Image (tube, rainbow, N blue to C red; front, side, top):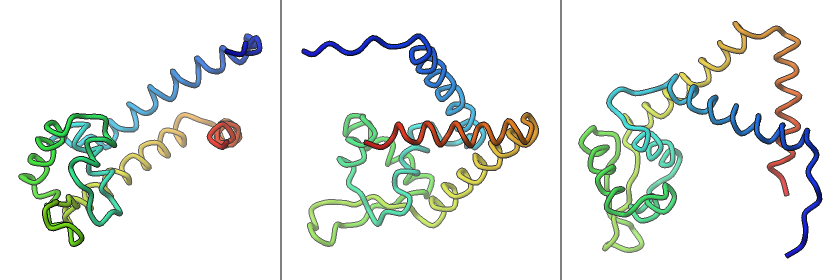
Length: 148
């Protein structure tokens, strides 16, 4: 195992602060579009299905990091709400694919819009133009961390 270079105090502090702030901001953004009749897991499944023609329950369970049985329960609840539907896989009739209904897609779109409006509104109300420009610059720096 190779020895990693000593981390600078500023790198350690920046790491702690970025992780803490992103975690809190993520919770606030998600709460901005909170749908009273949906759990966070259900909302996550709806978002994952958006723009896709159909996904198996097993694929959804793996993507969400839950057991197949838990995903089946989530899909059942979303089906009962009229937000998803099951249909046979055209390539393998033994499998069922899960897809959003029109209402499910509408709920996903509304949630995204609500989260966008909340964050833009908070930035408008709580930050100066100079601070908003600093956020844009900081995001460009963080974006570099996402590329290999």
